Length: 462
Image (cartoon, rainbow, N blue to C red; front, side, top):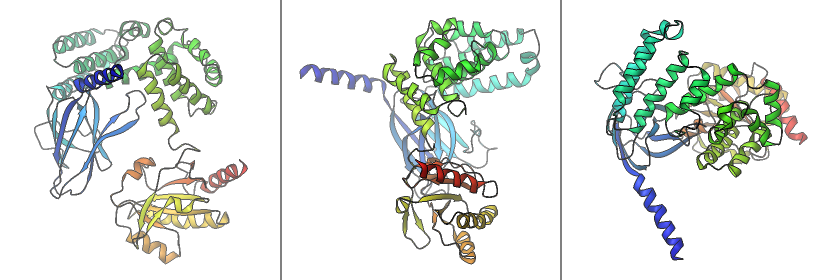
């Protein structure tokens, strides 16, 4: 008993020693009761997102979050469904001013994603260092495109790499130094200053895997995506056979034809997972075989980080796929009644995601009605309107006699992330057992009827 307690105490102390408090504050003037979240990747290879903190703005548009962070990592500030990038460090404080006018302010404004903000970070200089380096790196690329990609003389690349390495060699943050290094490695590779084999030998093979550094993982993924296409250590048919074969070792043996991968089990395992993920939707690949191989990595891998990556890939690949559980839907109609997707258990349901003042959304309601009648009313329709204003949609439906449920999301905006809704209208077919039949059906005028019929027939045949 004492031994168990000692081990538990050691683990607890270890976690506390590395986890540090982080405080995030901010303001979005005039935006009361808005959902604010901090989102990170469960791991940088799979890209599976997870929310680690959330709150809502007060009546003044202010918000505060406090949470623990173990290591520096890439993160998003999400305001509603819009997200902006920043770098999250243990023990840091961040203040965000969410703005619409991106021309003002003395600090950098993040506008690569829809959410724009001015950020004041007290994080030991991590944020500013990455911003400054990115500015120099992007300007260098812009000013030297021809020399980088077309000229045989790579002296300009060599000099820039040397200058940047010297400038950031004494940076206090290991994250920043690695971020800079693998940005420069990417430049050496893209400019062909160093060959594929040299890049693999000098920067990947039997080198530490920087699981939490976004620049390392993005380079890693892009490098191996192109490496196999250019070096061709195997044929396409060999790859497909290896993925579909129940023996996991065949895929590993295929990758081991590359000497460096043969000598680095950790890296080879990650490359295997990337190949499995990239080919999951390939028509020649058996999806079940991909999941089986990822589950085997979860079971037998010697590397804890790789086990977690495999678990995350399994989740990410199966989200909104045929047969996966459909996300919950519980929303309010115009009369204030609560309607749930569970209320339609045992029936096929077509979810129609629309937004107010969308003429094409209204026009397609007639086509949906026609398809429903042509298929003998074998499925139900639920229209989900973004936000609180659905009067126009209700009026349009009543005038034409469409009597299916029309629901508003209100502030329950996460439903759009749950169903991966990016554009309006979007349509998703749900099976009678509340699993996904098909995500993102074609438009009603683009053979939607045939898709619905096919998936209903397939479900009934099981």
